[in-house]
Length: 137
Image: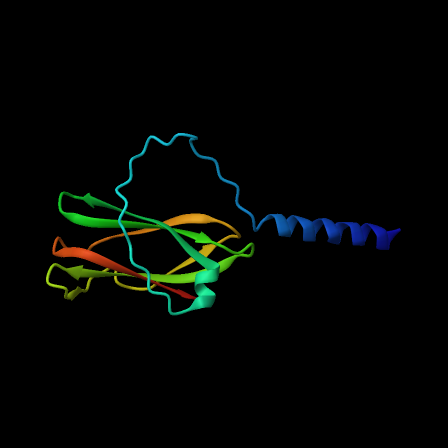
């Protein structure tokens, strides 16, 4: 009898742990937000990464009057949790890369099939463009 209780408890714990990796979401059927989408160019050098992580959209805004803000919506294409590291590079009008406090690598953990946005604000008004780099952990 004790073995049956232990087995049942273990099975319930494993099933509960399996459910914790999924994310359910709810949003408006007819969204009222009007994002300013950016046409993007993608360079894929890691086919394994592109199978696991998708870019859903790229959105831009201006904040504080003159700073470029970029938001990229990512999707974990896998049913398993995945860890990634990402970095925004900022580029001036003349094509030169800018440096600043938002130029470091950041980690993100996405649950199975989770969709989440990452964003950054340019370090100066001189930023006219951006580049997002993503790698697997």
